[in-house]
Image 1 (cartoon, rainbow, N blue to C red):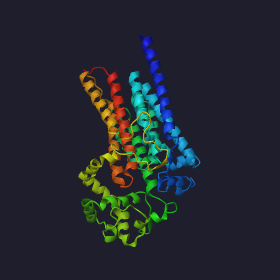
Image 2: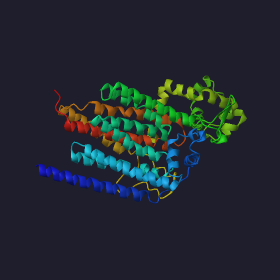
Image 3: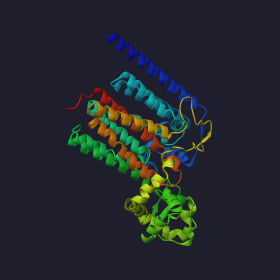
Image 4: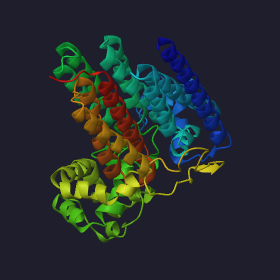
Length: 452
């Protein structure tokens, strides 16, 4: 019997490596001819990477510094950046597939789990972004290490993995400013670990401080820009200070496409002191542009934005949950990317919306349903078999849904432009998190004894 188990274990290992080989071949085949479109953000990252490292201009250049540092390390060579991004993506997710195979209590379950995760990350609407000089590539890739270090700590409780997780979270927060909100919410995860006595009070305090500092650093580098490096046509002047914060441009997009098109929101902003005149009203459904920054008839409006615009909008979102969450539900197809056509505008040519064994869209509702149904089945089995599968390991994974909620609110309500691109990470995070929930619950089901 033992020989048969050993034989099956070897067969599953060989099958896993075969699947990984197929994953790599398919990835290379689907991205080999992709040519990316040098969109404004890509040009901006490339430009900032050329700024001397030991200067204020580099560190306060309207962008979190993580990605420009990554580009600078690769000699600001776009082709080299793409090659390295692709290599890191393939190796990271292949290693993660091997990891979840080895950590599975049942090797058949481990093999199926490895296939599932590779099935998710091979999607063209995810993997093709490694061929952009944009932050999406690294944000997709680093998630594999966030989940790996977290789960490994839950299994082993070795401090090396909790501090490795913190290091990855710090890096993750510096890659993309909105990612810092996802990272800071991990304080909840560390609180759960503290409550379950997986970490000490001292470790919890250190982790909280590191997460808050990483959030502050990312926000500061993006929102305290220097006029010497920022586009001088995109600056406000308020109280003899140059205001070139990263949030201004998306804020103006919100004014044109949401404030001026929603009577409830517009009335609220009027009551909060936003200056309204005919020039501003004519900006309805108009995207932000240099004219917003230079038109003398919008001077009072710009001063109000610089003085308190962001705070007033934040207050509105907090005090009007029907709008905040209602808009998320109303635009759920766009935010979660299901029943949506692929956006190929970011690629000049060579982008394929499908590959040899997967569906076409990152947010295809079918996989959400399958993962959710599997979770329900596992929970029912645990009840029938009287297995206690709710513990620190699974509760921690459940809490990972909270950062996704915050990120969803921020990405949708933070900018009206390019919602499809800005929310790319949301369905990907949901799938990976649902997968890890299914994986951790199943592992507990396969190991836990009957509860008394």
